Length: 119
Length: 109
Image (cartoon, rainbow over all chains, first blue to last red; front, side, top):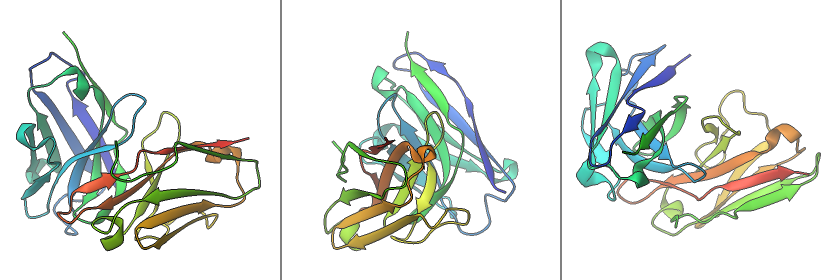
């Protein structure tokens, strides 16, 4: 059974950069031609897609976040990562790593990690 | 404001049927598959329906999806208290950016 687990900084100061990593177990991140995504959910609000990285390594980002987002993959460690820069309080959210993207449904989700932007 | 429109809340009694609508446009729902996600309180979302009407393994047939034109519908029959959750529809736009509805809170009375 595929499992995804987020890790990274839980409290980040405004204007700084958020860094999260998603460790994938129970399957190879390089097999199957899947894309791998990040999705976030502000407290008490709905889901917002951040972006995904294709199996080829190319990326596709939410236009509203594109200038601040970088998603990368480390196939040797079977993990992918998210960097989000110039943080504000509006970026406070639970961040999920997910398998899916590029018209593939989001079928496996990590448990999510809360990132709080505060000084 | 989400591009996909869902009712904020729906409710029904145990054993009854409820439907949740998701309205979009020709450039998203009208041209792409729709998925539905269930988010139980305090947990990550779970894929409930994909490709408009397919159920992943383990999802009971009480849950069904349909799509017509630029709208999609999730139906849940034989409601149980354990179905109380937030439900989100999702699809893609013409550039393959993912879109979600604002979510619908289901209350089982």
